[in-house]
Picture 1 (tube, rainbow, N blue to C red):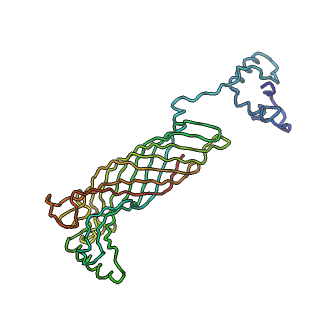
Picture 2: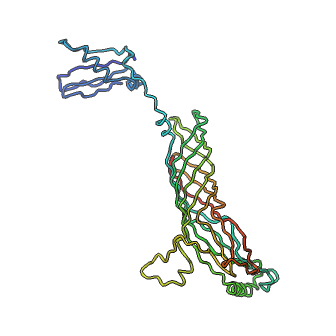
Picture 3: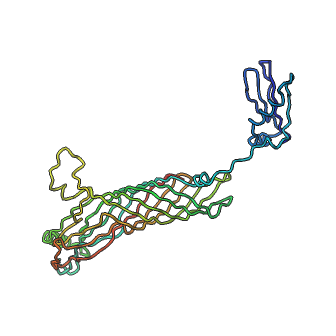
Amino acid sequence: MNTILLTLGTFLSSYPNPAPPDTIILNAGKNSKVIFYGQSPEDLKKLEMLDLNKILKELNGTQAGTEEAQKHVTLTNTSFISEPVNPSKSQHYLASTFLNLHVGAGYNINRYTFFQASPALMNHPTGTLTCDVVMQNLLTSSLSVVHDMKFADRPGYIVSLRYGAGIGLNIQRYLHWNLVAPVLFEDLKQVTDRAKEIMKENRITPLKSDFNALQTYIQVAPRFALKNKKGQSTFYLNAGARLNYNRNFENASPSLYSNAVIINNPSGPAVMDDAGPIVTGGGYGVFTKKHTLGLSYIAEIGYKWIGLFVLYYPNYVELKTSPLNGTDTKNPGFSPGKTGNLGFASFGIKLGR
């Protein structure tokens, strides 16, 4: 610190002398300047530790009442050094707290069989008919606040536990699949015609397709991140689990599209919060719950503030087959009381640290 000189002077000439290397000149008025000179750039960096307001007050007090201003002052007094301010607990916590956005889409996991016709019913030695429900993921989106609890902070990497909470909107679609297998190519028309007859006899009718889910969740995930020379995290990888609470809203009915007369509404009809079945047939219906609670699993990989994620949610909604009038009709091919889960796997982009 002794190598740094603070020079205060009044320059009456309007033509300043060229500054030597490692010198900082600040204009302090029309004809006045403040010059910081050091023997090396490293000395000038030490100026960040000085309390300049305290230095100027000290000089003004020293020069009060004198006629000639003191030209040079050597900074040897350690009281001029400003001690770094330690961050508070809240500031330290917020420094490791981040806002993340996930946007993606995916496809179905699992399949729910509502009706199954045997080869004997199909009049074919091997062919069977199954009426299934699967679920397509049209959109997965969420906004979360997460915090990193550091376990190991080394010069080259950080190991932490990331936890937080978030909200999201999912847009899903029930797909109604009628599958015939296995049959030879020359038997396709015969088996297909018979399958259509069976579905008509049992009045198998899909009633719901699209639905939305408002989601809240808490998340826990171990995290590993590399650090650059400046101590900033760069490449990262984390994987963990979410506990999700979903509120499901039905927003479209395929039967309404075919039966309703739509006037001045290009988006089609909407059925909000309908508790009816997803598909019916043979005196039975497939029902689901409006409120669901379940685990999903998420993995993320990326660089700084942008990355990719995969979300695996195997038990997103639970389906159950129940008699429509409360009475089991003993119709073959249906399984009253049967339950199963539909899920999805979603892939997308993550924005945030």
